[in-house]
Image (cartoon, rainbow, N blue to C red; front, side, top):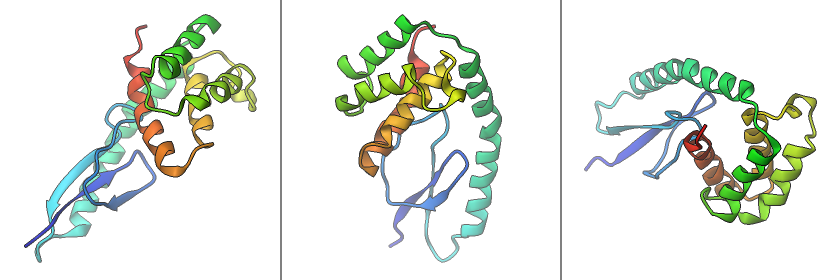
Length: 154
């Protein structure tokens, strides 16, 4: 009996056969499951080629999203409201203990590139703070971040 395992397509760095798991999106459309049975006729090379093609096609929308976030200026008050919604209201599945670290990284960035008050800098403050937690909670939080930020009203 052939077992079904999805192939997980990531936004640029890996493509791997994994047991079925539910994943969120960092940027809308980044993760896609490719379900395939694994009988004798299963061709991993062909399946990987399809996955790589899909990854490459998702680069342009992702690049546009990053550019929009780099241009999207936000006020300090708006950034604080986003942090409040994420951690206090619990709208982002991430450890609440990271609130002060995300706040520090956004308002006192370690790198000059993230000093502009933009959605991109805020996103990077979140992802940098996520590095403080264990790998699985880090992955889950990062996977939910894009959808959380994307759903915010303009």
